[in-house]
Image (cartoon, rainbow, N blue to C red; front, side):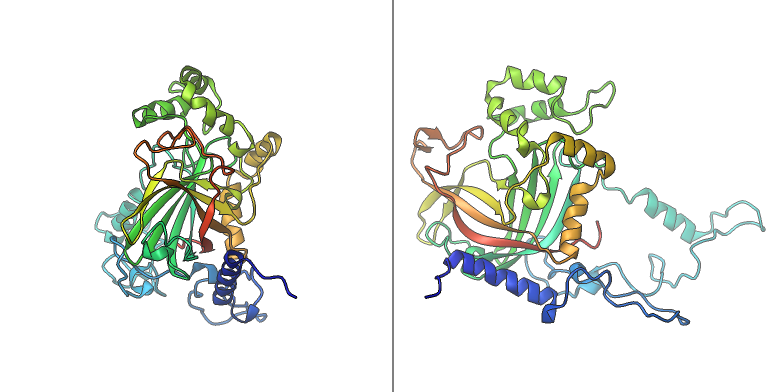
Length: 385
């Protein structure tokens, strides 16, 4: 007799097969460097822009409130086979300014020059205070249908597919910092559901430094670079950080996790994601359940040791960003199972003597097993960072 497959595993395999077939029809080998094979003969005629590579296809278009618009991606994307001004006029030259004479001064009447420089001066998005260093990918989430008893959310229904966008990041470093520093990390998942956008944040450490949000600016300031020198960059283990955590005993739990191997993941693809807080879900009958969310990577949880991190940050500061993009481009799509720990919604909101509203505490999985409710697959890189 053949071994009967676990229904959750079977559903996960089914999703992976569908994604692979959609991106590589006919089992075409992944990892092709371009959408078209180059000609062996030297080209003699101009060739227009190549179409997007397989990992650059876009998801459906949605409104800010999560409603499907049906607008073709090419109508909202930057593209075209001709260079134009912002007003759509054909542009024949973008390499030379209008000048008074062969070597004369540049003329302000050159509207394209002013437009191009203005765009350049304003193309930077202000850097975030935390989570400035990030990388992201598009994907799809498929529900297992196993969450019906605890939630009426449609996107958790059996085989329901929901487009997602996920951003991974460190916490403390600037946009130019290295990827492999010792820091807390996380990834934010945006589900574009039929009922609206659902956001879920997962940290790679299941607890947090503080119990009250009023201390959040304090712990971040403690971990940030010293104000007189702007160093150390993106490192949590330094004087002001130690000052904070030694004066706040509630921070001890997170500090032990942060200083363990979990502080330096091997890859974004090998990070767990924890909701940290406890959430309340409502089912179709109006009954409520308290839950903690868990993302479990299919590749397992792996880390870098300190010496590896030091070498890697020197040789390739973009190591995690490159690893994620290269894996998706090659067709090795990273996957995570979403699971929940469930607890009775009692008046005291406690479970086995553990305060479910205290983000510095965990509930051991031996006491409350994680139940899988869906699978996320990341299968496309951003086309405009």
